[in-house]
Amino acid sequence: MFTCQCRQKWVRILNPPNFRASEKKVTMAILRDRNIYPKRLRPAQHPIKQRRVPLSPDGRVLLMLVSFYILLTTVPQLVKRIIVGRSFDAQALAGEVDNPTQVTILGFIFAAMLAVGCCLVTARNLPRFRSGVSTLLFTLLTILFVPLLFGNLDGFAWGSIAVNMLFVLALATLRPELTDLRIFSHLGTVIAGGSILYGILSEAAWRAGTIGVDDTKAIIGTGILAGPYPSSNNLGMGVAMALSFAMLVPDKKTRYGSVTIMLAALILSASRTSLIALAVGAFVATILSFFRERLDRKIIYFLAVFFAAVVSATLPWVVYSTDAFTSRGGIWMASREAILSRPFEGWGFDAYSRNGIVAHLLGAIAPAGHNVLLHYWVVSGLAGMFAMSWLLWRAVTGGAILLSSSIAPAVFVVVLLVLTMAEMPLRPEAAIGQCWISLPVVVLLTSNTLRSQSMGYI
Image 1 (cartoon, one colour):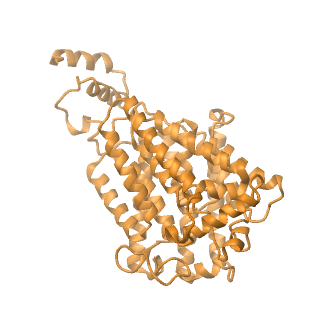
Image 2 (cartoon, rainbow, N blue to C red):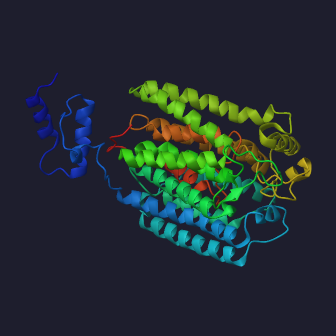
Image 3 (cartoon, one colour):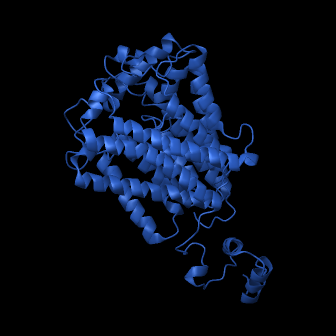
């Protein structure tokens, strides 16, 4: 046991007068971990009880880029709901109508703003960029190259692909601190709270059920909250992943308030896969919090990852009922048939369109494969499936590296893997609702650019 004099001595050694304030906070966290942390401190001196923890410079740039991406994927959708309402989605999916002109113009404006911002950030931080720094960029190029190689150019959304490539390049040059990831909790709270408010003000924020089906799967009442998005799953997946970073919010009241708002939106969205993913993530987080040694945490983490990955990879291949998992069984069966007919070259991005091979085999429109590995096997063949597997594995290892500092990235990875079983939480080629959080976090984890020296949290 260290005496008070010894404790003061360590404080003087580790905190010389020329230390910056941020470095002193790091030192106090080190002393606490060594059981020589001063017991009585004013709240302003305590690294966890501080109400204001400033973002790092790169953290502020990350916040700006992600905010632009949210504007791109949210505001045009919100304007569409206001102009034409919710019933427009079914008609657009069937190809009966086109987007309103105002929505197209808004999408172009926000895409241009994001592209310009990404170019400026990349040019400014170009010396930081290393060849192959981002596994997600490699995966995106692989997914694109295979359809191009075999001439499957139908269904290419060139605008979304270009924006996502610039977004990934800019993110790969950033070096934010691990604590900066709390911005995803704040942004998730804004999206969840805004969706609830929009649901109070307008019926256009609600869906009565899945498109083309009269019955509802609502958990509370008869409506399903989708907010500005086409599907309630877009809202549910984004909120479920954002909840992983709520533990990084230093102020307890803000943290509990964010969790409450996001949980309310998630329940109202009735996204069952997102609720299951969040429950699994919360269970893993609880188990991890009982262990402080990095090896113990790694064993638990990799066990959770192993079971989630096995289920995600095998589930679509063992289902033989078209009505299983809210009619996902039929999509999986049609996707399997498409894979077996062209296992190597894939069917291109047109495979899940209204005139694609899956719709032809299924007899109905399937906008996605509802399983990440299955979807990209259909789209980009065996190479695309392996590229997505490699991307997810790199995200897993990125979460493992940070386990000694925080369990938040590991929990995010577990939630992401569970979502890949029956949803599409990560689509490198598409600018859609939930990608505002999945794309940047996966880039940061796979690039190993997060700095964790100043962590004082779980």
